[in-house]
Amino acid sequence: MSESAATAAATPAKRPAGRGRNLELPEHLKAYKGVWVFIEHDRGHVHSVSWELVGEARKLADKLGSAVGVVVLGGDDEPLEKYAAEAFAFGADKAYVMHDAVLKGYRNEPFTKGLTDLVNKYQPEILLLGATSMGRDLAGSVATTLLTGLTADCTELNIDPASRALAATRPTFGGSLLCTIMTLAYRPQMATVRPRVMAMPQADAGRTGEIVQEKLGMVETQIVTKLLDFIADADSSKINLPYADVIVSGGKGLKNPENFKLVFELARVLGGEVGATRPCVQAGWVEADRQIGQTGKTVRPKLYIAAGVSGAIQHRVGMEAADVIVAINTDPSAPIFDFAHYGIVGNALQVLPALTQTFAEHLARNARHAA
Image (cartoon, rainbow, N blue to C red; front, side, top):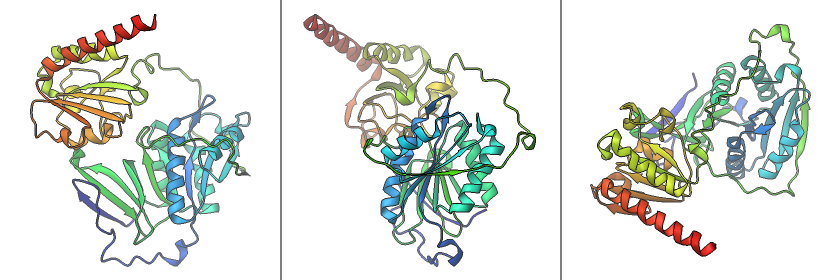
């Protein structure tokens, strides 16, 4: 386990982290330079969280005065160089590409060896992965193999000015607090971030970078796990909260599951998705795939309407990056009004039908005028 310094508060720690510690980096770690991102791809598509992390890595690297590298692992016939070129457009400077037949399709053993070998050879200071099914599985194995620290499900990444260490903020104590964690005595510093937590960077098609080709040196007989087939989840695209432009979310302030139909009706009129708080999911009011927050989905819509949602930090970390947040609550001192852009103090059971009718009439008028 790595030595780490942690501070916890209702908001990310503001005081200089590491106070009272020797902030001098051990001599053997000073060779570690650069911020790396693991590029996650599957069936010809790069997961968008990888580009979000490249944008974040660019900010961190600029503060450190270092470069951004990406790691792209895959099969002999996969277009890894194309993914590298995309990474350059989003802010990367160098791509470490590894083609190998055993890297066709994700398996923990070859991917762990490939990534750890690259880290040991090139010594990046920071390594970022998406907190997806693949990223979480790989990050834990890599951190264990490298004997370094890993901060999971981060909501904010920064560079501590005193120690120049990665300051990784994540919810803790069941989402009631935010904790800023630093790995001071080990490298690389590792963190995972969920999709849509970080903003998608602007692509610059004119940017280029250097591609470094590496070999894995592993044969199929060395790998216990075998990839037999891929079976798509027929339900995987039915609820797509992280990429919805409009989300109407309900909390326990709606009183009972029957009242959730008011949330669905408004979302249908707006062409949006329906979200929910953890208590609503735990009570069985809606499916688990609709939960937003620390233990659910992270969303970044253009419009987020929260009805009967108190705004506890566990929920807040999953939706506060929305462009516009509209809160409806009977309690004028509810925490959600502290960060909502617009607040309606009122009964959601009355406000939701009024909004649904108003939006429906407005959209109908616009449709007639367009015709």
